[in-house]
Each structure stands twice: as structure tokens, then as C-alpha cells.
Length: 143
Image (cartoon, rainbow, N blue to C red):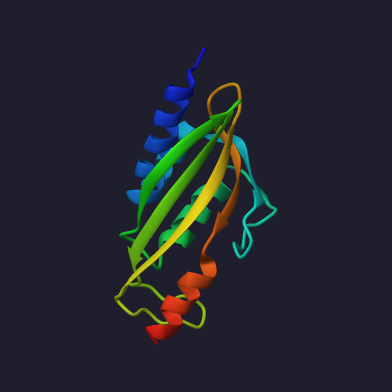
């Protein structure tokens, strides 16, 4: 039986390997066969269920404009099989985004994500809120 502490460590490792380092193939170790973005306003994948290949594609496309991105995990809270992660994110805007050519400037945001796990300790999806407006304001100022 997995403890809450072990699940938190697993989530932190997933964030580090997949999102921070961009090791998309590591997703195979962490993500279930189906991953659902239950709530993530402004995310092109909001409301979609992805297979692992689709999840990897999402990571690659999400990291493309900010390849050095890093999540600074602030807190991890548990509720049943769910882990809530509050975080600070930053990355250098080196790739184009629709309407925003690369600026080579540091962009930051904050957010909170509820990750769900299955009985095999694989991630099955998330519910997230982020400060995307703040990101767009920073990009706009940098134009």
C-alpha cells in the first residue's frame, strides 16, 4: 500500500523529470493509459482525455516556447488518492506563441493543481487553476 508521502514523492519526481527536464518518455512510468484534463481554463487540452502519446505531445508543445521551464513546488496536500500541488513556474520565452514572438525574457506564474491517481499509482488527470492572465500581461509588456 502506497503512503501519502510516497505519492507526494512520486508526483514531485514526475514534475521534475517530465515537465522540468522535458523527458517526455518518462511519462510512461507516471501516466495512466488515459489522462483527463478535467479543468484547466485557457489550456488547449481543457476537457480532453489523452492517451500516453497524446500526453507526451501535450508536454512537448507546452514546453516548446519555454524549454528551460521549472516548477517550484510550494506545497503538496493529500486527500484520498488525490494530491494537491501549489506551485510557482518560470521559464525563458525562447519560442514563439500565437501572437507573441520569442522575447528571451523570463516569464513567471503561479497555480494550484489537483492530480488524481489510479490504484497503480499512475496519474489519471488533473484539475488546475493558473494565472494565465499574468503570463499574457508579461508577454504583452515584453512585445
